[in-house]
Length: 405
Ligand code: SF4
Ligand code: SF4
Picture (tube, rainbow, N blue to C red):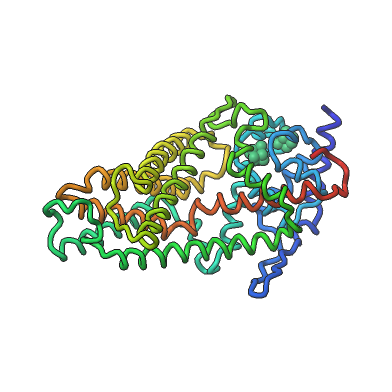
């Protein structure tokens, strides 16, 4: 143990005294890429410091992909740090296992250090760059205010068009808002969200220099991302949330949320095919594919976000970054409200308040789409890219030969 402490102390002083580490530069390789400031930020320096200590200790090597990826490096430049930060699933296992965690003088807190760099990564790689700071402002209040404002705007539009309450219309949404108007409004906003996230993650990808992806690496990364493999803590019992006890609920609620979202997306896609390919217009029967997919997805999107909010409130304060909780909760709230208003609309679509329910639901969905590229949704995209890089990297020869993969 004394030998280990000496190694860790050496790593810490090495990290503190090595100016080159604070002078790493980030290189943009794309044509339109923009150079960033060269020096590591304080948060990145903190990741470099804890990684130096962890590299001397290596107790957590089996917990997740971060530690075997770490052992392939002796120094941690900006791109390495951004990659490792996005590879971290913030499961908390290494904090609860760490003999150097606070109140130890080394104050090693890997999940917190990684979380602080992660949000900075989204900001640094954001497109357009001027909107990157929205990641730090996109909180619960902003999300709810955006949803309420847009819903109110649409409610007023309905009032001006003839009144909120009406004779039952058999669920004919397009009698309230024409199909082409909705398709244009949501298509433009969703298209922008995809473009903004796509450009951001492409910049990240170029910068972490992943190398060529083999089919096996892609399949493995997709498998790990879809199963949320590392939220099982590396031993199958789950990760830590509020205390030292393991829990699988974080993984389960993520699954409810992710697959609920995908089912709702599938419902919209199938409805689009019905509309344009088969010439069948909404409303669709309760037992049709779009409604069944949407209902199953909506239920998943109620359970998942509600559970994630519960875990978020109970989370140990040393895990993650408290400053990001508003962003987490804003996204969770919008997902939950999207589902709740969608299911309410389905239940009330044959009644006289359908126009009101529709206006509220569309306002919430629009707020979700508007905040999508500059909120918590980004973590799924960047983490999947980091997992793919890890799947590529682990297939490449380890030049250091200092640790196991
Ligand atoms: S988190 Fe702590 S216990 Fe785990 S490898 Fe790092 S220093 Fe060692
Ligand atoms: S918090 Fe979890 S995922 Fe992140 S480095 Fe620690 S063990 Fe790995």
